[in-house]
Length: 266
Length: 266
DNA sequence: CTTTTATTGGTCTCAACGACCTTAAAGGGA
DNA sequence: TCCCTTTAAGGTCGTTGAGACCAATAAAAG
Image (cartoon, rainbow over all chains, first blue to last red; front, side):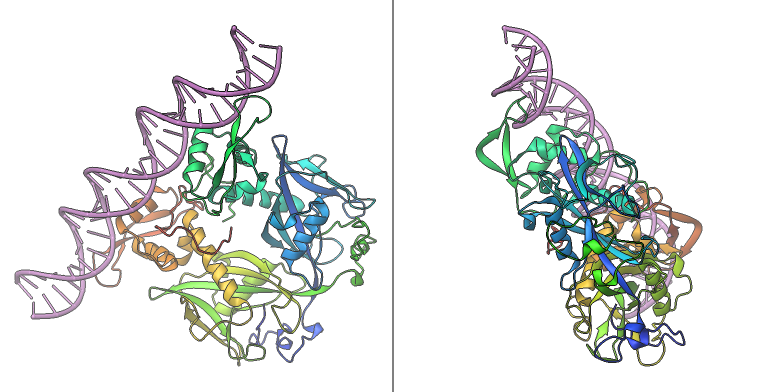
């Protein structure tokens, strides 16, 4: 932080140089490289997918990794994350997408080459456009979020942990916020909205109970009068809805049965 | 993050230097100063208090600020935060205290002197020892967490926002975790535990309903057989409890009435 | 035309919560 | 001393919401 005025009682940490003047003494602290990592989720063909890029260089050459990049001198982590999101997904209207800071990963040895502190974000994309692998070498792809290893083995660096944290965060937020609409296109059916919960949580929900719950929450969704869609061809056409203005889901829509996520992450 | 292999299709960001070798090219990115900021809460005489330090130097000289400090080259943000917590509170058994990463604040102009990226933490301390102002100049004190300005005016830097975020996070976590015991001494009464909720939420809770709720959650608290305490002198002596092993509170103990926190912070 | 699939709506039961009341055990004040 | 206040502890009761289950509708697939 800022404001370490005190001398720490005999402990020489170099902090005392912090406030001695208008600019900092570069020898008073260690500069770090700061990056952003993105866990971009979408739903494709009834499964949760995650956007990954393939590394071409060592370390972890040939392994999949989360997209991301360096913070530029004039931008915040949020702006950097949204910029990266636009670059990696190729989406035009990145402004409206849900982007949420997860946490910061700063273990000293998380990158073998140097000290890198990374601010991780979770992002939700409604429809998954083609993953376009940027320029030449790198490949980008939507891979199904699998239990355990992501398709071809574990991810580079500590990205498996970041991805797991992101998934847990998203799953938890579905319980008490109206976040689920961020996975849906502008016009969606209640079945599609329910599928978001089922796919992220990995459980089945009762369609009738889900419907009542969603409609009982003011501002969660608004029906589009007179509109309906043939879901995939089969079944009765469903009414179309759009996202409402509400952001909180009260009372919450709790996951069925599962006591709680295993790992203590309170 | 790591792994920016791609060329970003004509955009020259300097990222391509990232993977070209075993070490990074220092010219490929901007190094930042990384710090930790701590929002340390405790409950004193029935009010929520926050640990603050008084700045002696410009900028924001004379203003109160959150304690914190630089990350050292060999430690993670969590370790740095715990070290700062021990230094600032003077507590011996910092290992058992609740320390939780909040989020990272990285606005380019948040420190007028240079670019500082700060990882913020929220910490809970059961009993508040004397705030010991480190060495000489700096003063540290427990100030009541007031609605609006913290005692003598706003805090330095963006610390008012960090503090508000920390308070909202703590209040929310009380709803669905057993975190409240972190505010309590090793042996506590149910009235003391209830006061934690009342003080943090700023509401009154029904003692009987609260009691049933807490005791109905397995592992939240365990009664210490035969022990009781005269709370403050008045009233019937209360049974003593200690924290149980549970970490999740299921079903949650929701705040009364208040629709939700005002600001959309989903 | 029959089957299949999905939406939409209804009913019923149980658990949980909130409001309220009663009793027990202490201290303070007149 | 007696009475009142205070806090803990325990109980009742009505309302609410969630979950399980059933039924009707409407369209496509065979």
